[in-house]
Length: 272
Image 1 (tube, rainbow, N blue to C red):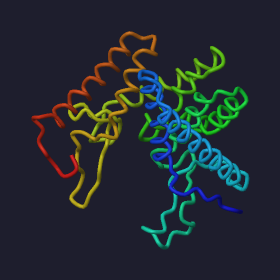
Image 2 (cartoon, rainbow, N blue to C red):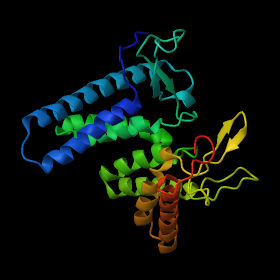
Image 3 (spheres, rainbow, N blue to C red):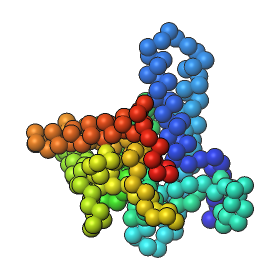
C-alpha cells in the first residue's frame, strides 16, 4: 500500500486552519473589502480541502484492507515525526490511526472538520461529497461514552444537526447530543471512580496520575469547551428542569475557572 505524503498534518493543525478560515470570514464581513485577506482565506480553505481529501483517500484504503469490522473505519490520530521519534515505524508526516472504540481522545475532530468543509462548500455536488464522508466518520461515534465527550459528540453531532436534510435526521442528532450531555453531568464519585462532573472543582472528572499519586485539578483548560455543550443542551432539551441543571453546571464551571485562573488564583498542585 502506498502512503500519501501528508506532512505537518493532524486534526489539531487542520482545526487551526479551519478556525482561521471561519474567524477570518466573520472578521472580513465586518470590515471593508480586503483582497489580501480574502486571498489568504481562500488559500487556507483550499489547503484544508486538499489535505482532508488526501486523508479521506488514505483512510478509505486502510479501511478496505482492514479484516476486523470493529476497526472500520480508521480515524486519523497523529502524523509520524521522525525528528522527535527516529524509530517511528511510519515515514515522516504519515498517519498513525485509531478506531471508533479506541481511547484516542480527539478522533471526533476529523468528522467535525468534514462537516465544517461541507458547510463551507458552495457547489452542491462538492457539499454532498463532504457530507457523505462526514456521516461515515460520525456514525461510529454516535454511542460514544468515553472521555472527552464534547470533542467526540457535540463537536460532531451539532454540525450534523445544523446540516440535517430532514426533521427526523435533525431529531436524531439532537437526541444524540442530549444523551451524551446527560453522561457529562453525572457527579464524579471518588470512591467508585464513576461519573464525570467534579462539583467542587468545576471540571468533568479529569484525573491525572503521576509518580506521587493523583492530582485533582482545579481547572483544566481542555475541558472548557464542555461549557458550550452544556449551554447548547440546555436549549435543545424539552425538560425545563434538565435545562436548568445543565446551565447551573456550566455556570459552576465558569465560576471555578475564574477562581482558579483569575486575580485571586493559587498555583496549587503541579499542573493545576
